[in-house]
Length: 133
Image (cartoon, rainbow, N blue to C red):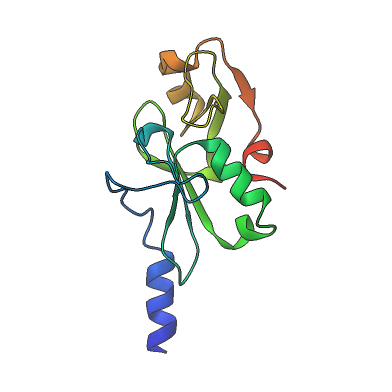
């Protein structure tokens, strides 16, 4: 029973803290801009951080079914606050280039996106394009 209780507490703990020296779990570059970061939390494993939403997308494509059993968070580009990836709003920008060149940014809502000058002139991207089916 104690193991079940501990597992439930860990699962509901929320997003992990991004350290300044964290490297991307996909490309191994340092996560230099926390506003472009994302993370995957898999029960029983260390958090995996990504420096570019393109890296997250590629990681999930290489790991079929992972998105259904993991918790995934993305940073709101405007505020830096972690938000559940399946609820986020994604934009392919014209002015922001992430470390691996995806030009993708996430926001917690359309209100946050519309208040972010970096999203001006960008194109909406569906959540399935980022997280997969």
